[in-house]
Length: 134
Image: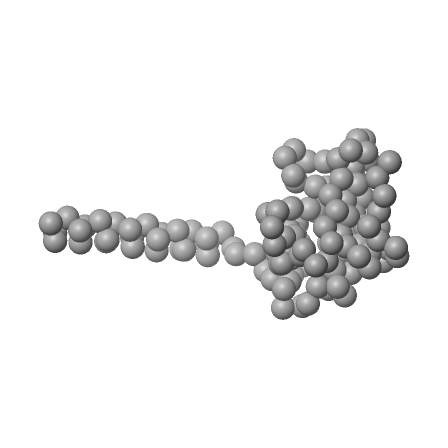
């Protein structure tokens, strides 16, 4: 059996982890860290101490009316994506332990598209300038 890193739990709620395929389980937000435990397999768990959390990224739609998923970016191990029944409760519980300026909105579809188009045109321009100079 896996031991919790938390000594006190502020919130426990049903959730889905998107690490690989979707895994159903429970999220526990406590005084020492963020934890996800799978319902079916006890060996599939995620424990993230608060010292390891770099950013919490929330995907916000319809001006904050709906938050379909959120992600926790760690300092060393990458990004973990989750969704839950009441994501606002989870984000408010996380805000007690993570500084509010480290909880950010994710980019919209059009912001990602614009950023990638700028990158594409910039690389094409560099390649063309190299061919002209040679």
